[in-house]
Image 1 (cartoon, one colour):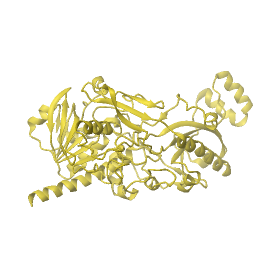
Image 2: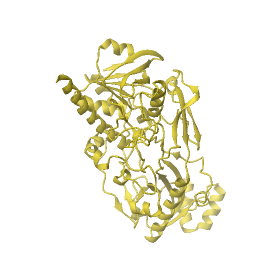
Image 3: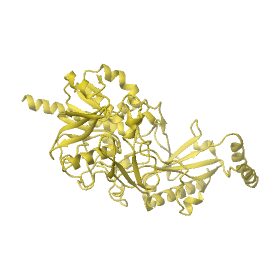
Image 4: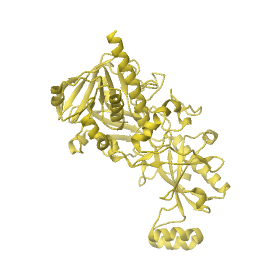
Length: 486
């Protein structure tokens, strides 16, 4: 069922067992999982079925620290959420991403990769994936791995018809939870904003916050402030330990054996380090992308020429302003350490049209980012030469510790942490079941629960965790029903 506003929904008489705030990949996946178990849920979507300027304005905010994307550009506020601009890159967090690194504080999840593996076949079905082949060792310290680029799933488009026909899902459009109301042990209601105006409250036995890796923290911070700690009673870590994946072109490569790299149809080959290699250099996880066909036309000609006549290539490239010196580019994406100072905070001066404080994102890379970036390139270059695959030239700005370029990707639009999973209430917000510490009926879905980020895109793991949460909620709702009947 689909309703255009809160009034339509109220008139329907639909009674949800679970209220899910947010209709992006996590929220829709949880609702579908509950529906399969015959459990009714309501999905609150603050936007409409299409993008609107007014809705998107709610996401404006500021970043304090390193250069970052405009906060109203890096995510989308309409049905399907950020899946509407997802590129489709897929990979699941590795097993070692869930374990603690002795040289990096606050790492280590309370669950293991094995806890989400039962949900991977369903995850692959949702995202249109096939099984990932085993990583293949290429050098002493690096493995060639596959990143699948699926037909990017727009969750709103894919599931709209099924939701409209469902007896167990009520999708409530143009309606946001302005705040949650809690008494320190459970959520009693969500205050609604529908079509720009206050629209009463909604109650349910269970609530799930699934509004994204920035908005989850924002909603909970604001609700906690309004309820004097009644929504997140243990709030030391709320909004903190926020992470991204920094991404930069960090070097070039002269290839002597392109075939050995087995690049994909776009000329890309991806490599990750072994856990032993990471521990050896005390770095975080990363992946190296070698792009063997980065240029075309005149630039391609110069790149090829550089492999055989570098002096001539430099002369020609200078004439064209290209400055090309090699046959491949090297791109690095890496995992950030979870740091308390990287956090989502509420603005004390700026509010959106509904009176909710806008986001202040405090985000700054630190020395471990620098160390990981440089040592990753050194390790890769050493192994590349040792196996006679070619030679790697590390960019001067990386070697010399210069400022990060502001004309590259910067990061992946991957918003992780802020409501992280853990056992210690001082360093985490939710437990291993994604339940907010101390709250009987409040759960969080999405990448904000990530304890660490690994090196891969988060969507596949988001869906797996959402399926796991949906399964847990289904069993808990059935248990509550059974207790009530008894």
